[in-house]
Length: 260
Image (cartoon, rainbow, N blue to C red; front, side, top):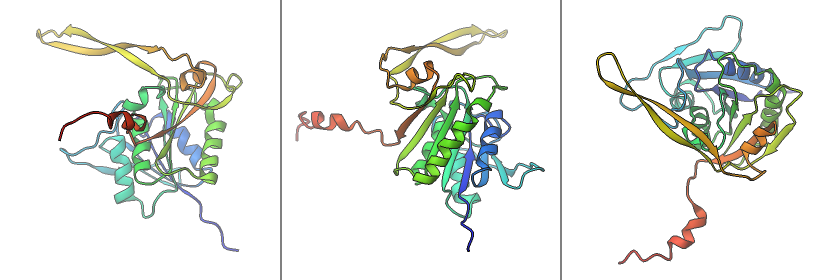
């Protein structure tokens, strides 16, 4: 009997190829398929869907002597990594792209700024099923062990059932022990946002500079949101999409008079 070909899984992130989160995700992916890693050579957090158009891009093989899969770094953004993987590095279309595991939350409005989710979104645009994973812990040495079984199960489900074209999963994992995590909830994105401020300072040469600061505000009291799930120690899955059209408003807009 002919052996069934293993699924090809593209792994990327925005924290850089040496981050603990991506190393965890790679080890899980290797249990489920053939793995190719293409990730930034340095941290690229909060890059959103930025791409490199006014500079050169470099790709280098990243050597891991104890691994039997290929890893590459790029000098570009997370989205650049997916584009380079699809068009220059891989010899066939991946069956799945997984991004993360991010060090820090990408729930609610954070999805807009996230390099992790933008990499997954780019894969979705190219017709590749994609998942972005994030852990609500910004520590570079964060403990990802509590999420391992859940991450594996979510990947297995997507590989088995597939995904609707244009849908990308945004998965956030609470900062909690394995025993404290209650399970998985399918959620909507919370209507929560940042109230931002700039901390203005002056350097020794008298030149002003700024640090972006702010406070996260959640006015959404719904119990079907990603923020509620995370606050109550559930892993949240929000099905997202790259179609940003406000479909519900088209009918209203058609009643406006724009003249002739």
